[in-house]
Length: 381
Image (cartoon, rainbow, N blue to C red):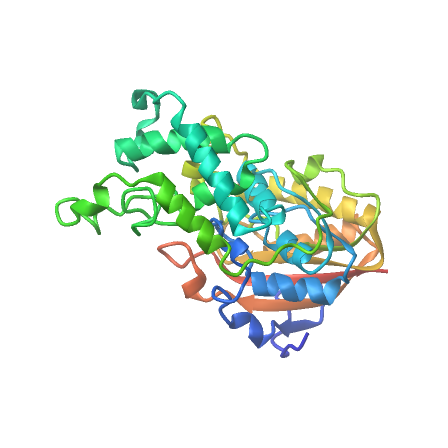
């Protein structure tokens, strides 16, 4: 992996070979990546092209790759596409749906369309939902008839085995474009854009939006650059890292833990969580992203389990979002390095790659918080 030398790593206590990330990482991949990556949005996810290079450099075909912070399933999908066996986990039910949809998709677009058609027919047989029983903040996003269709469809899509069509449905849930179901809204984090698109000037954006044709078009887009995972040996576990039992032995770890105190996954996915299960909209305990002590607890558990199961000479790559705010006395990268040194002493830090996050990749209106990602690359002695 070709890199350029840059300034020393910011920690004054822990020395490391610090390099700039490869220039190729700056290139856009949205028009070249496997289109399964675009099935639905997920805040803070790693670029698929970066995940691919990490998989290639730090694992081999047939290896078992572990990712206990799977998020959008980007790293597991790239690992499976390139013939690695995969064990992944995440506490989020949204992560479970995305990861299973990407790792175990229908074999062809025809199969996926047939699955969706069947689900639509099944949904239409359900009783019409009483919108008065739906929270006002959810009703705020949709035309009443669209919301009725969406609620009925979600009831079918949340059944076990329907993760792919649920993911496609969540991928068209809200946006201002006509191919989506909501009133004009942001795509990633749900908030209405009715000030930019007032109803008086854009009445067509507040009309009924039929679910079926939008869902079928979404499926076609998802198979535009379809790469079937080469490995079907994949496991996803929906649990926090403290409760995950990793395999007895594994060859590599490539993972991107939640940014410490920078993102709130429950808030940012609240509308999708409601459709996954109406009881989940405020369920998620995001304390590991909001409180230093809980973040440290999660990373300590992670390090202990890697110390136990990572094979000799195996690599552990941890992607850390560097928080430049004033919330903590130490930077997250320094915190993670200290934890690994204490809890996983057999892991030696080989390299730190630094990658600035350009403003165009941001998901917030204000470009604050995480400005840099550090790729901490360890090897088991």
